[in-house]
Length: 142
Image (cartoon, rainbow, N blue to C red; front, side, top):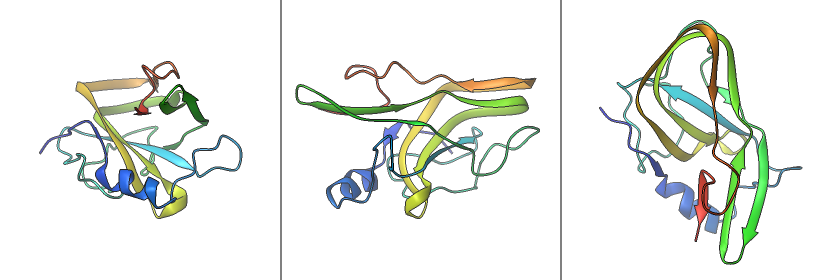
């Protein structure tokens, strides 16, 4: 099994179909779920799955609701990011994540690979999103 970082192909098509709304106010609800190294996630992932999802103290299946920062445009590049996600006093082990649209049938947006497995023992576990800019945001369209 593997976690391959990618924007999900179905997400790209769904954008053209007008399914996802990244507006900071009134937009869809996006969530982030954490996964162990046994998960099989890639650009072919179409919906949230519990298979291979992280388990442990301080983690709830389905992950956390993200605070969407909104949709932005700089020149010809559109992008979006989220506020950091924190699991308080978590005892978990995780190797990647799936961001998905909980408002639209748990449709997959993007897969994140952490580059290794991170174990956390009873302290806050934080996903730090990159700066919300056209060069570093987690979701960018050039």
